[in-house]
Length: 321
Length: 259
Image 1 (spheres, each protein chain N blue to C red):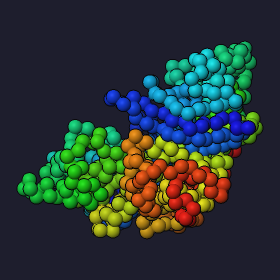
Image 2 (cartoon, rainbow over the protein chains, first blue to last red):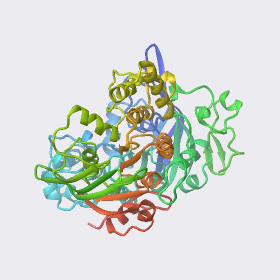
Image 3 (cartoon, one colour):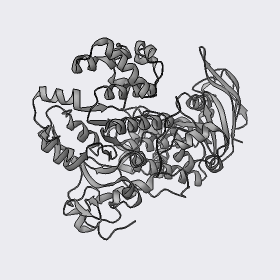
Image 4 (cartoon, each protein chain N blue to C red):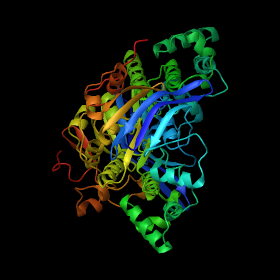
């Protein structure tokens, strides 16, 4: 059984007299202990989708469809239930740790607060556990670190502190929203390795939200590619990078420069990514797609299963790369 | 040689940001300066364009050595025609109240003696060369996407017809599909004989695509430099190897440094 299931999920925010759609018809499941990468460019709705799982939707947003976590719906539940969910079962790692860790409280306060308040751990034990957690995420000398303040730590270290705080509550699911985008490549490698180790040791599921298809492919079991508020392709990670089925996923893979070979010019996707509310009728990607046909602009392609991939493209059977 | 930097050093208080950095840029060449945060790569870029004064060493641009003396207005304009910079963030590097056409025309008016009609035509040519249309000239930055803004910043820099374009993480904040477009645009401009590039970046794949030679920096010092393809194919220094190994690619597994 899947740990979490999004079923026809959609989200719109009020704009002037109407609504602006940001996410539409998203179907996504994550199994126990599974790592899923949700990949997309700006405006794709990937962050919005992930945040909706723990009820972090914009004010006055309207949601459609269902999100079910461990058999229970999470859309429209009471504040108390939501709090339980956030404190015990689903934890989030944000892109910018500096913006999400209180700068006037020490690292020790930050790490032990949730353990003391939510898990009922005694303060002394909480500090011991915090030191162990810091060691787990590769920060030695935890006693000293607990006394330090966020401004004394580099971005890479602070992101590890945030991951330690997430591991402290031993959640079933970690939502990581561009957790390494603000970090150097060597720190990124380390942070992803730490997340993976912790996941494997505890059987935690992961939803990795990222713009970096290569990073997601290398660290996740399955990938879902979003464009203009919809998931256009879902496949096991290796299969998607070897044989993308949606023209957008294929285009993204090709347009990224490679460290192994130089292209005279990169194969580009023309135009720019759009948000769901800016999209033309029909397939939102059609205006940028070199394979688009008249039919593509007339109807929104439904998601179809092809060779183990779920793809929203009218021409999926005939297109290969 | 368009740029020659010798023994560059920059000290902020007690911190040494750049220490004994030397490199050269040939006419028409694209040189990458690669490093992680704190490597000093951006400080080098800022010294090249005169936004920071070196604490030591020399920078020679187009045969003339930069002096620490405060340059006159005419001297500053002359320098601007030699070297221009495009910054990382296209949201903060443009005046939000200035229309796109004006951004480019202001640069043109400052450097060239042209009639308003000529200037307007040249502005449209420049917008066209970076893939923007005539209708964009009347727009404000907020009406443009991030990629379009970065094109405006590039057009503004090119307006001056500089010998050298310094690009400081100029594609880092862009979406993947837009990043590819801008990289191709930069390759086109250079192929047309536009200018030489100093390309500051942390992204080895991007550097591989855009540069002929690369300088790897760490903690303010040069670790290694050489032709980019060779440097990436067979890094000589352990640090360059680590950087390369940290780039996600098919079959890559993230690793922890030994504690």
